[in-house]
Image 1 (cartoon, helix red, strand yellow):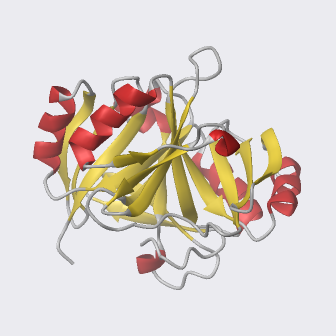
Image 2 (tube, rainbow, N blue to C red; image 1 turned 90 degrees about the horizontal axis):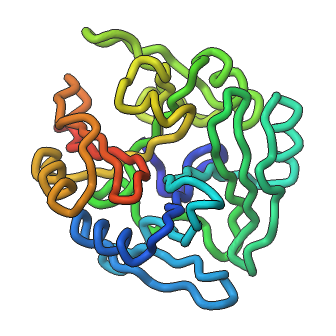
Length: 262
């Protein structure tokens, strides 16, 4: 699972791009209890969502003509520039090259060889999210891709990820672990065939963040009441937990999970 030490190649940041910051904040405050800490002029208006005083995500206004509403997942790198070169060598593409974010760190945005967007974060004074693995915080990430082997090979080249095919009654699932992960417990996400999930197919290749919750069914009801849309009703996954997927009022996709007892 996610490690608060944020080893190289593991998710260490997420953010939301949305056309209506006020509407997004109302939705996520009602759903998870997140509070917005607005960004100043020096950050271009980039703000933070916090829960009980700890940062759980970043957020920024993205006009509709500049990009569709979406959640983005960032992975830790000790050298964003070196990672950018490896991405291009592996068949990916830079959407924006690495740049300094004040003294907080250095970031870059890319698409992988199958077209899914992801980011990298080289820590400075900001080492990563302040809360993970708790209700209302990031707990898992999934890549939806048209070519699972190609995506696995790409990210193995870029980050050294280890992948393992897990077999369940409903089929197989490819888990992702950092290069130095030694067991299934070190997995922080999965790779899923894009055509295997009707709820995600229309979005094209993308990363889907999962937030932990105490009650997936109540969260689904809350999301609808707040103007979101349930794209997959709460469903039990044996030995994993109860999950549901959504889009927020602007259309950004995310998921929740009530983890199964350990």
